[in-house]
Amino acid sequence: MNTLEGQPAPAFALPGSDGRSYSTAGLRGQIVVLYFYPKDDTPGCTKEACGFRDLNAEIAKTGAVVLGVSRDSHESHQQFLGKYQLPFVLLTDADTAVHRAYGAWGPKVSYGKETEGVIRSTVIIGPDGKISKHWPTVQDAGAHPADVLAELTKMVHA
Image 1 (cartoon, rainbow, N blue to C red):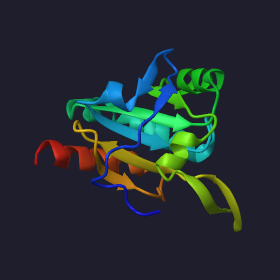
Image 2: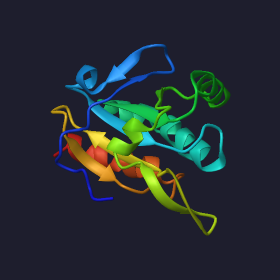
Image 3: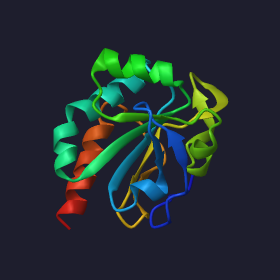
Image 4: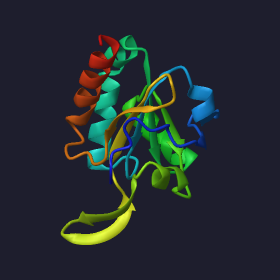
């Protein structure tokens, strides 16, 4: 996947775990961390989500909001949020249209076998609605939230 950096964030409107709808238009003017992950309550996804949870206060100081995106249902999100006390909203993209728009769906190698599915990736959308940072593939789910925080800190102090 080529980088999306510098491009306008692809438009989306998705239901959130808090019962509200989230859209690019509604989020304009904010710094948004949009992270795509394969499945609620699986080992890598839990490490990543808990990393964002543990750094939430530091991320909030940068003015950014974190939104996780997966194909999971509202009910699944509720269980995942409650089990790990996640302080951010999870969005449901059941038909993968938003995943595809952000390059977070496609061929990948899983356990040595090529399949099609969710590609763990993240974008930071700036207040202007453009993608300021894109991680097309996240290799280390546990370490990734700290990388995002470092990038947010650079943005704020630039």
